[in-house]
Length: 606
Ligand SMILES: [Fe+2]
Image (tube, rainbow, N blue to C red; front, side):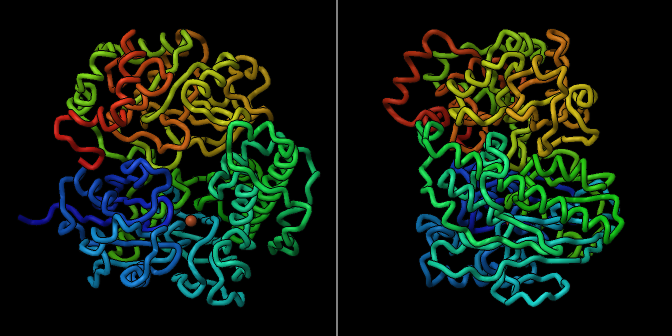
């Protein structure tokens, strides 16, 4: 039988946010991050789970895949895999995965159908190749990319040494043709081997350094952005400076030497809090100014109207808002998986466009690219005897109307619909939804489920056609990646989503891309006159966003979520819940118990 489709598989491998993206005839069929399957946040290591998830969802095998394109931001993948044969690298390939990896057909593959590409090139393809624009420019800024010696795209040479690392890359594109205009490298940082990244003199690396300084974790940049508006202007000296169009990162001086403390219960009562707030303000302000200068330079040197953005720094929605409003582009499109999970998309499109020389024919209009779970799979997640005896399960003929009533009654809803979102944000298919009309809802969400630091804001979803009534700025924000000022007349109406600086990280919802979420907002608007809801990720602190119906049920049972909506089924806790879940936790892990009687016993990849 002739082959029906051309398949390209893109993979981000070995360090944080391992992920896969499967293209079917040049369109994203499925994409998934390893963390959603293994339940370990930012999961690193081997990529078997994500490959299996995509192939299984499509009903094909690896033999059906025409091309595999991979990236590791550390070394070219063949070199990484050679080293792993004779060198223990538990951070990149845990011992438990080693035997499995060595037997896998992609590990050390010599096939010419398995390609390795460099990091910023992959980010660039993830941005322009699926954007709605025929031509424009691309801005890639992240923590750290590949070595200069491994960067594949030709670019203006500026004397960077072979061991310098990618920090920023700027491109122009027209249709499928990509041209690099400028790359900013970080020269090797001297210091102890273990703190190389901590000392790298680049924009994203510096932001991560401050995240480490404040939170004890390089990957808490979103929290740092949330903390910034509490800081005092100008109390901390510059951390990033532009001089004659070039970035300078001043030496990390002795002014900033408060030791960080790990994020604990008393973290925000620390006497160092004011200093942390001040330094957060400084690094955020410096970052916005550098990014704005870069974006303006790109526009002025190319006269481009369209800007595409990716790389971890593109998750900074406050800076994105300023770029969208102030840099002078007519249109800005940000890859929703802007961090390294999105590398899988970029690898796949490099394969489709550059290796296979195919045409651009796909626009990423939404991020719901996980697999779809059937109603039978949803029902199976509620079948365990210990689950059944503590929940009331009811099919609804209008789940949006019924859920809107519960929301208006201040109930916290776990909302599970359709395929999962790819990228770090829950965009309404794996979300916790709540009423934004009372400020206390923030505390309710935190005390019952999220357990976040009190300073962190919750984000709103809004009917797209009402966004400009409630939030300032013309630009669309379908991926919750642009912060906008809330109009003054609305701030008291939706206080739970207004940050201390009067802004909100808004997601606009269109009927075409998420009809269920749109109908939920419509129903809530009809009841309350407010077309806005709180949307936060369906997880508890420190865990990845849920993927499967089983994940949803176990998160529901072990937290203070009031009701769970699985497709059109409304699940409520009965009085037995207070007795049974503690018994379950006595005998084992609730997630394992919930999963133990599903129809085929399988998890996400099945
Ligand atoms: Fe990156």
